[in-house]
Length: 309
Length: 263
Image 1: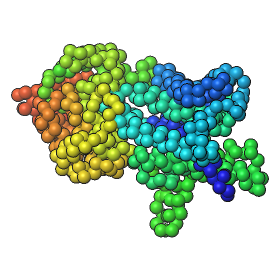
Image 2: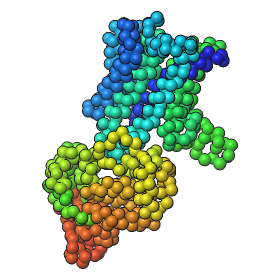
Image 3: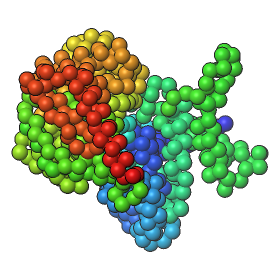
Image 4: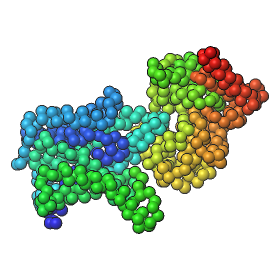
């Protein structure tokens, strides 16, 4: 494996790590399987591409992307908390309608950003002594760490704790005076805001926005959360959990990169990527089961090998 | 003061499973009262607590606390007046959060903000109140609640339910699913807290001895109605035998009713 391949895997691991933190917030913390992300990721990219293509400020583009993501999450929350749709259906509806919204925003199915002013170019002009290859991973690392620490802090606040309790024991937290509709709205808005931020950065990094780029976002996010979870054992601590999600994202991107780069030797084609990502998720999900079984065989006490959640 | 006015509740109306859980409940509970409620399964005891807490809304009737009409208020709003301990120890705590985090959830009943849920001062306070339980929980603040036994979880729930001086404390057979030794200990802790904080309490129990030993007023329910309501001198003279007789008398009436229908 070459150095540049690893570097790209890191960069992507950081950028998609922001998305994975959003998925962690809904799936793990709020216990809400939110499929909106398949739409809010390209939404962030679409808004960003539209603004940057028209010559707008790339930082402003990021802000608007986040606002768009928050609104998307809010719509899913509206479907679920006010119209009483199931959590899955609520996400699917928003995700589907966002496809049309994204097309409307972009006006076509693909916007290239080559030669346009992205945040990477802007920061490069501030620090001319560094190359883009040096700046990109550092910038993305700083952003994902900033998001991580802000999220850690938020989840330790009174509101953040109420959101965690909503995912853990909804009846209990209601009897302690929390309107769980509100906590779900906050969680979904925040999550999709992060996913759209990730989409915005990815569009600027990869130099395009495409209406189909969101397909499988949720699987990649889940893969990161699950891979991270099977690595880091200390589940109680939020700080460790969010770190593990980022590490999971890096591992996932590295694996995907390797599969893309060397997969042809096994007969894989680029189009098989989504299949590979699903296989990765299945493997990551069943890994703890196998680990338990192997342990049981080694210690030969026939104990039930399944581990707690 | 808690007032229930003409409460009706019917589940699964219009189906073959239709159950009239509550049929015209009128009840006033004064501040400082400690009411125990007994009754057989399906008498409507739990539904009554659910209606007070707002988990279930009645088909008809009003719920008032200190003259404020709460009939249309959601459960989370009523939480500012009501502390609650459920029968199932799993229901009162968040399992994947730590003991101190659970306690932090219970400090405020409204107006939560962006302050950190935990700080040195709060931890100190938690340690102090947990030490009073004498269960060793004060040394386990950062342990996840899922690691606790049923008794420990229930003790924690009681502390959480009463931390924010509630106007009404609802206990729904909160020691019934624990083994006898721990059940006694939890009941002891409960009584200490109620006495210390002078809490207005409604305790549902299926243990008649407990129903008469604790509190100052006892209510017996049957098929959605209050059929016995005793307090003061009259209650002191009541024995378990008497309660049992009431029960069997009811069963006989029911039997006769059935006979009439079948005849």
